[in-house]
Image (tube, rainbow, N blue to C red):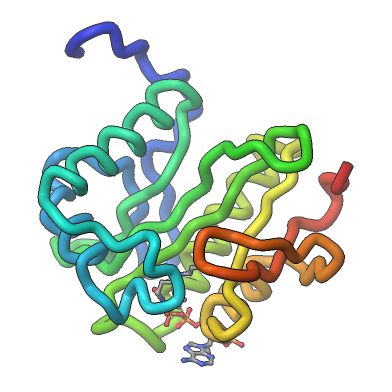
Length: 186
Ligand SMILES: CC(C)(COP(=O)(O)OP(=O)(O)OC[C@H]1O[C@@H](n2cnc3c(N)ncnc32)[C@H](O)[C@@H]1OP(=O)(O)O)[C@@H](O)C(=O)NCCC(=O)NCCS
């Protein structure tokens, strides 16, 4: 442990497993993948504000992800196939303020080489399932650009439902909203 970082609350979720995937808490060993993914124009085509320029930017992004883990005991996971060192992408939730309440914002971004195999849907389903069990009172939201059909499909596959009445401007233009069922929208 370095500095004043608090130990992560013991939520037992530093790893999640699905049929094909292992999701685990990111660390310094993931820096190359974080940098590569967030400098890939195709992987950020719908959300160009997420593009990074320098490795230092990637280090800061990992630091923010790690702070979330340290503070809340969950965050974004690194996604790999079982028994493989290949990082497919990242998927998880982070706490954000939305309409005067804290909600869980669902994130997923995968390397284009892995697209179309159902990996994002599988990972996002596991993450939303985790949230339903461990954070049952929290609304899960996904904000998706209207042109990003693949991402919309992933949100639905993970069990979220379209909430058009919440659509609002985001960093890259209008965001379509998808939300979890049952947690209430406040
Ligand atoms: C969105 C993204 C994560 C999807 O990854 P993926 O691994 O290809 O997704 P899956 O293979 O699990 O497919 C999920 C669904 O999307 C559909 N889909 C995948 N690519 C699609 C495309 N280009 N057009 C339409 N539907 C598509 C699949 O058929 C599947 O549909 P189903 O659930 O009805 O069977 C991936 O495209 C990505 O990383 N994009 C860049 C980052 C991004 O946009 N993140 C979301 C920001 S809101």
